[in-house]
Image 1 (spheres, rainbow, N blue to C red):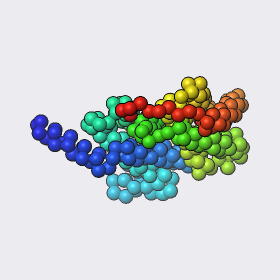
Image 2: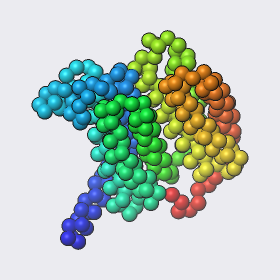
Image 3: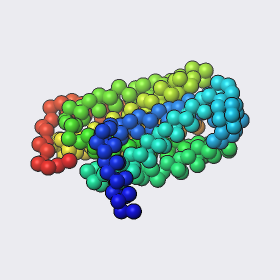
Image 4: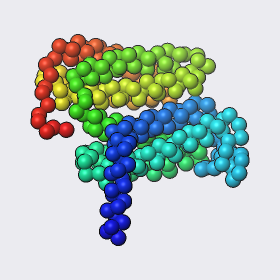
Length: 294
């Protein structure tokens, strides 16, 4: 029994050595993001109730395993990619847990992502069987939480390769993403026909980019910047970005004028914060990593 366990652990370590755990984690992150965007596409095209409201089956082929039409294809393909994302999440968690060379914080984050995965699967099932707004929201935010966990874990794994320039680059990405986030929202696209599935996918893609940007800026800023006030500005920007993303989602769903105005105001403040952050980080002093730091 002990020999089998040792052999299994050795095989896991050999697999990680060949593929590279950082690359495995980055691939998992990409699959999680793709699953979220395909879920948005399924919702935007009204395909959530396709596949004749079957789950996990669809509405064509042997045992109803395949889609019968285009709406069903959106839902089926979302599930198909989600399946591989789930396997990648589990594989990343097992690899992190079994490999002593992986940072304990990274292992904790990816294991938590694995724990949330079956909850997300159940919520996905309920979106098909019930299709209620509360369930849809829980399904979306759970997916975003898993995405955030893997972004943080990925940044931790790549820590030694990240510098002050990556802080500036992340802020540039946030500065570019934020106006697109607003421009692609129903607040600007007042004609509902313009708010097409492709536009919605683009907006949520920008949302994920915005979240990733502020996470990278804060984490790398804390490691590489000497100015604590500048780091505090980055932390404030991250908090503000979370509120903007939440309000953007609520504004889309409720079309509440009060939320619309607050969303626009906070987006403008966040944009200015990004611009100031870019200017300050470009001339900021870099902190030399301590010997042996990871």
